Length: 165
Image (cartoon, rainbow, N blue to C red; front, side, top):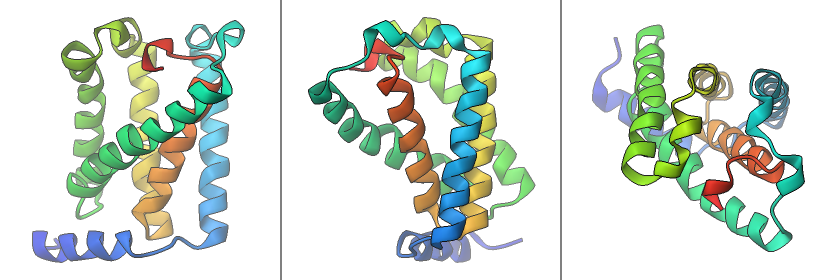
């Protein structure tokens, strides 16, 4: 098993690594396919009649890049998944799923109906594992950050989770 120090050095290296274009593109395509599947599971989480304005969308994309994309990915796919093993992916995914209802209760009470829905939490687990796998696949945590950002931007762009605007 890799030491914490060696894993930390690898994570820092990944932060300086631009993912290969082909692998990053495949990862983005994968997140779009999974997002389509999420829509089938959670159609009531999208409200096409209530899409954000261009200005609101700009704000959403900026905020989404910082939190959840960068902050959550660095913590859940970075620090909690340092050795990038089946065990660390499992542990980081459990914490990632748990974080959503805890975060809603602490910071976004209006998100509770979404973040406590078992269908939503199942999709969070699927995306958590996917983000960990694409980090390993591309050799860069930036791919999971980008895919997380695309996912949240797509959800918000289609009128989902109006409490986040």
